[in-house]
Length: 508
Ligand code: NAD
Image (cartoon, rainbow, N blue to C red; front, side):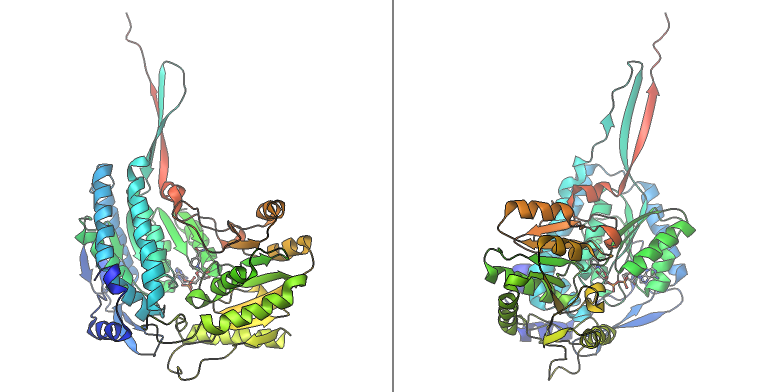
């Protein structure tokens, strides 16, 4: 069912579809769905009610070897890497169409796997996946080499070639979208791919890859293995035949990726990691209601499980009380925990019980360290079977507190008051992260100063979390070293080859 039709479904319709769903659970290698050679499996759990959603093949090292060998063979055969660019484009466009046509099933898989409200899956994730593939398809024949200026008896040119086998290791918070941000540019550039989705959300990736095959993608070009990071992910990142690992996930695991590359073949490592993004609200914030709504969405959307979540709300002292009052008023209605299959639900469960325990633990720490809990901090009543945490607000937060320093990855907002612009910049930059920041001011000069002085890869002025495919997305400092989206991200899956031709004039 396509996106338009899916948007008109009711909760009962979604429940009926979920009851009939028989998701693919095996690995996809060389165009075939296969069980693990060791027979290993793991369960994926629906975090809304704790039920077992599916038993999924768990890739061991031998399976990863098989997947990489298949990707390597496909790459060397040229069935994809040497396909005329327009033909590669056509397959990617066809893939995009098939994703649009199967949007309901794809959205449902992510909602069941990790608790995302179905409305978000349909209105945020799927459109972004479709845009990503469309954008990367458009870019395929825009990848140029160059002829450089050299002496007349020399012809020097630069070719741009794909890297080979790309390992994509992705997180669970936007399962389809984070995978697509890697797989689409890697494929568009002519690479072959082995994708290892997060073990909390293994299902939609298999469907994504199946649709690529159906679109005419050659077998072996897009492979998927599932399983625990420490086994399947590690084997992939250490693999000597992998030319690049493109990773999105926590900063701690991102650092492991750099080690794996050093221990194996110096593969390229692209990292999109954690964040603790500040939003700075100056006293001259235009339209405080809009700013407060953006603050609320910036931390509570997707249950706060967003890498660039605006988790630190830096508010100038002069507007602090008014800001907090309005934030409390807006949040009371905007985010209510409920069944993620209900299109009216704006907040689902966290990804699993472990995440619920971790977030509640941070809330306890916030209280103990002296922050003032203004609402939330608990689990919603009546939803005890699920991994829910209510939207939570702390005020009186000092930037030295644990809740201001560590990535909570849950619906916990921290308001930090500040006195002047210098203090705001110091607080904003006093973090190991540097993914994104929001700036709210009427004053252009102030906005310019903040844009330049804040150490983050993405800055939003008088808005938050906006953008499109032309925008490079990625972090400074320990938020990573890569840029997703944008044309440059496609180029990052290529390498240059320099060809120097000495032209000898025929003698005589
Ligand atoms: P995670 O680091 O635990 O896992 C990410 C992926 O790495 C998963 O596929 C996992 O199986 C794998 N993995 C885990 N341990 C591994 C190991 N030892 N070796 C190889 N692979 C391993 O992160 P997560 O909990 O899935 O995702 C949440 C994190 O992702 C947050 O920190 C969030 O900020 C970050 N994130 C960043 C961006 C971005 O664009 N910067 C986007 C989304 C999420």
